[in-house]
Image (tube, rainbow, N blue to C red; front, top):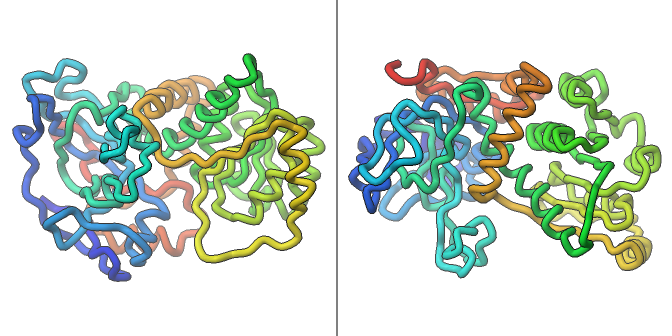
Length: 372
């Protein structure tokens, strides 16, 4: 069975590997799911692992199969599986339980373990292969109406967790009804965050570097949000025009912008960080005293959010379905580049490295679904 893999820590080691066919009997308690991988979304994580920046192979393997954004069709289920059936579409979650109390509670996305297990990233093979077998607890059913866009569920789940965390934290207030939000960044996560917030009825400004002439800006405006380019307006100006900013979702990984976001957050506001900063950048001209004063007097919160739980995947299904109903075809426009087949892994990496207009790159493995 073919798979796209790397030798972790060896830059540029992407290659076509061979895996044994997965067997449903390998999954305990008769709760296994065997699925054909239809397509897999790829992103900067896959590029960075191929660059040797991080990633770890499973125990006993010389390579790591890439791909954490799955979309699959069930071929067989174990005798104890009743939740899904052959023919159903599923997306598998990414992180698997470790040893901490949070892992034992099913909250592995909140683990305190230093060692963690993520499909396609750390110690577990990913989904850039022909078939996978896994426990049904990690398989999220996707309705046929989302067949074209279900591959977006994993990145959507990251956004869903970020938003859920904000609402959960603000239960401290007794009631929190955010009306205005800013999304920092207009890449895949930024656009999905914009969508999810608009589904909830918030007034949204999406702030990003690119000019208003880019397709991403048009995508923002297509869901009724407002796009602000950093080339035309500062974040301060955008925030002042919006009014009290209840929620900011950061999706850039550009750390200096985080401090500016902290300064622009409104009273009783929450800033959720989802971007990962690379390097050792230092922020200049940070108004530290002003930020500290604003956070204390304004009861503000800043929180980091990584990965997602099953509940976030399930909420993502709901929001994707709502987006399809409200803005037909909008989600499909996010899927800008398709790579046909596992053999074209070099093309996949080239697009991840060089393409300036890609929103979401997808590798089509079995595009015809069951029976293909």
